[in-house]
Length: 478
Image 1 (tube, rainbow, N blue to C red):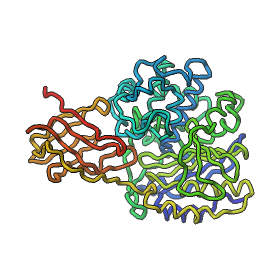
Image 2: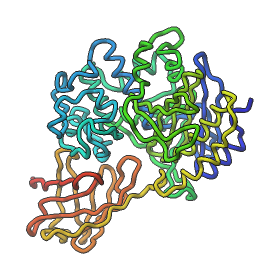
Image 3: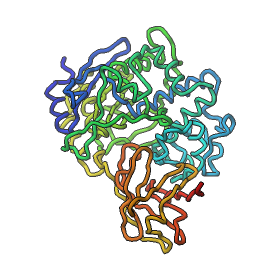
Image 4: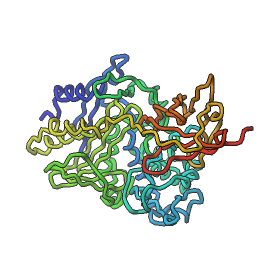
């Protein structure tokens, strides 16, 4: 049986503007299929292979969840005890969240969403990262809804370090990579780029624009949410361990009950923009795995999107199947990976062909799809104390959560120093506008407001659309 035709994949890669993709399918005992299509390096015309290293982005969260569950099974931490009982560093701004637990973070129910401008942040320690979280404004009440948060999964990695005395990198390596024999998998974008068979990440603002190579983006404090680098083939070892209830080639890594607990669907969370008879638009989040019901039976999956790469890991335990799809394009609509994986699943299980490629393609073209790369926040009405003089705005400003931001002036023009990028501030009346401010996979166009009496004392940037603008206070000059 042909699981996926080369012509099908080449057509989809061309349509979505994806340079290359690799797929591996496994059962409990081993790999059942592997294939690769297109290019892993468009500059050198090198082909993608099933072993090509890609950033798996948010699929990394399941590694962090696994580490926490394994520490819980050892009795070194409780997922249900208040975090304040074992950590002095982690707090939430909401006073009603004083008893927040690791399970709350795992299920994304802290009331804090977004704030992705907090990471990566070169130079920060994970302890400093934990201390910053108490200054992030919530946008929902505590435990009211489940809303996706990279920030909190990064906090989980830092908390795992506190209770274990080992770094997150050491925990993932010793508890996952080494016992599973994931010899190609890494926790560094820099090391990925040094490997002989690595995929070069690409980006393009629109689907039909030619993809351009992107520089590797080191995750540092963002590793627990998005820092794992792997290949389709290496990831089958990870998936096989789940299919075998926590055992890999005779070695138990986690109890069967622990695996079931990780996959258990708990928190309602949106899935896809489509609602198909075979897969209704209802989903539940577990510990870094989403669950939907496909043809009446549970399907566990997680997407990943990071600098230059997109991925999807999938488990179908009732059929004994695991799948990993990786590609080297930044933020691909879910219509692409799901059409590939559902087609392969139907062919493996003998279900009637559903023509998922054509059925899901329109959803990836909707305005609110993953191709809404650039989010632009309109200029607000200027406050009475807005400061527009560039010389009066230059300086260093700081927020207790986001840290310091420098604004420099030269020849009457302002530049915002945002992480490793220098971004011009364009005057707009008495306000300013910044374009290309990178936050996770988005490039934002935002207003910047300086306020004060003569000389600016604060800088306001609406980094999160559902909370008040972040206020950075001018720091005293040395």
